[in-house]
Length: 316
Image (cartoon, rainbow, N blue to C red):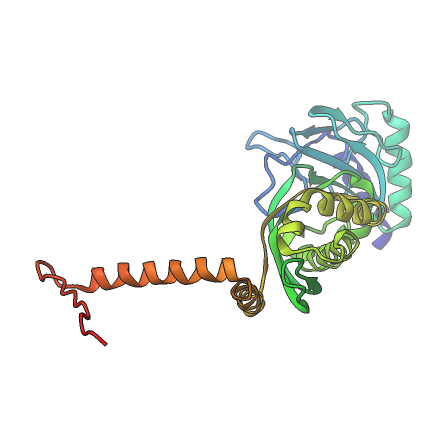
């Protein structure tokens, strides 16, 4: 009874898997890097009984702009389809009578499945990857630096804060699948990898700032050297990321480079003290302070109230 059931299942399963399929992923949801494509089945379709893990030779894979499709056979990448439009799938593991399989192919597949109790000893899937640039990934970091102010001679340890965003893009789909997808049915989200790659990016950026930062530099100098720092960080990181993960940094935007408020206050107070030691600058500073005080007093005088000025005419 078991042999008859296996034989029936083998032949029936092979015949159901002879249909050519169409695989597509119209659009990947926001934040999805990789997802398994689904077989298109309509109301009038007769291809409803086939094994979901068997893809017939000659089937069509539709790839949209900004996407790449990977053919997976038993965990291995057997095809990379990165040309937008219709692509033809090829596999010797699942020939079809509508292509080159013929009757011999049907018999061979039936016999192979019979040995496994009626099931197909193959596992095939189409994985679609999003090749677009993934932008707007925020980062912020603080790092200790040593500042020597050229105007005051102040030499002190300070904390520099840097913030911005970076973008990345998959450029080696097969490497990305092998390293990050994990299995042929897995869905990979940006949120799954973002904490790790952000930490690595920040560490590399700190190294790049350290190479660029020179004695006597200020936060302003680092801001003006932003492009140099970004190029250094990308060069350090992309070589490793491309080889190990199949993606790379595309662009980095720095929107803030500044000392902490405590360090700013310290630097400004020392600069003010230095200014007051110069007679010329000190006189100018005092005159400016007096002028400001008079303006403040005028503002505080009630409207239409005359300003009283007293002259001391007492003779000594």
